[in-house]
Image (cartoon, rainbow, N blue to C red; front, side):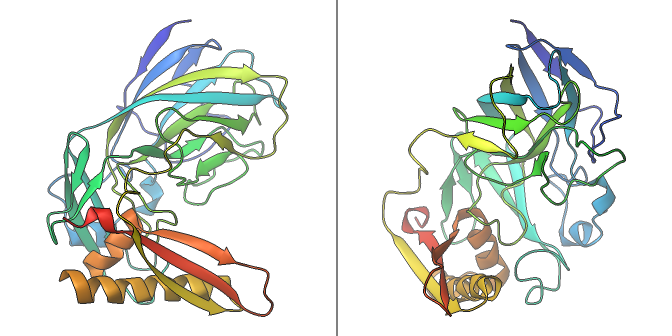
Amino acid sequence: MAEHYLDDSVTQPFWDNSVRPRLVIEPGDTVVIECAEPVGQMTPDSNAEDLANLDFGKVHALTGSIYINGARAGDALEVEILDMRHKGWGWTGHIPGFGLLQEDFDYAYMHHWELDGEQCRFGAGDIVLPFEPFPGCVGVAPAESGRLDTIPPRFNGGNVDIRDLVVGSRFWLPVLADGALFSTGDCHSAQGQGEVSGTGIESPMTVTMRFDVRQDLAIKELQIRRPSPMTLVDSAGYHITTAHGPDLMENAKNAVRYMIEWLVANYDLSESQAYCICSTAGDLKISEIVDVPNWIVSMHMPLSIFG
């Protein structure tokens, strides 16, 4: 078992099973991976205008690919997240034409966070989130030939944005091409379930992962096993907004809209700031999906984040 290092001097904003790997390792090896700022275009000095002119062709700035010897189509790639370290800054925002409430927020907005040790400081409303990092993109090369963009999740994993991929978790992906050709990035310092604005706390990070090949597992899509507790914000209760109706997507939008209204009314935040807090701290949940003809979606906001 060896430890390797992979820098972010070259990034990969695509999935492609014909790509030449940057690193070849053995099962059981560990890799320290430098992950660039997620969209590969923002800096601590970037602003809303930069976000409005975002080039989606450069998203996401993934680090890879890593070829794992012995991995063959039909196997499962097992990955353990050992460590994640931020680099002092991150951003959240909303982008025209993107996000759950894109019809409500048709302009660009960017908010910078200060990352200090185990805290993420919003800088408005005395709001502080715990540092609970995870890689938003974890994926292997797809089975089909050609170059695929990284925006939607796919059978190869990809841009899953599941905040449960925390340090101490283990996950499995189906191997779809020889060597697996694993890449990762799009790291978030914190995120709510749903990532409703389209962004978490987007952050460059150093990530350490251990890789193995499982020939005794046959899985069709990503599976995860994570440690407890589910989140460090679960200490002071929640405010919950709900929305009902026959359309889960419309219910989700309305539950978030109601939460934005509550945040603006109670914490002296702008609507854009409130939308960012929903995306980075709020959990969007399907609370009921059996009582025809209406379903319930709820948005849970942890009260511990408010100073």
